[in-house]
Length: 92
Image (cartoon, rainbow, N blue to C red; front, top):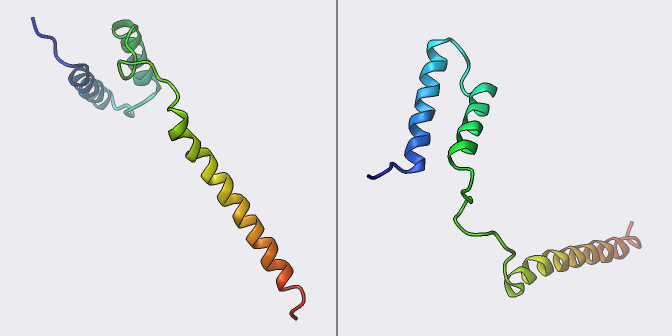
């Protein structure tokens, strides 16, 4: 027996809740619909991870530049602003 994908099920559930809300003259989405989706997900998908694998930090060779470059650019821009402000103090 083949089960439909979770995405297809959520799509059908979304359409169903939208139709019911429309027939009841309610706003959609609303707090009750959100709570309903959360209950459904907790009941049927309680042991699923988001991507099927455990999240972890990237290796240091990738993470290092993402940390170092913004720090260096900030220091460089600060030094440039201080240098330009001291240079223009004598000019009036």
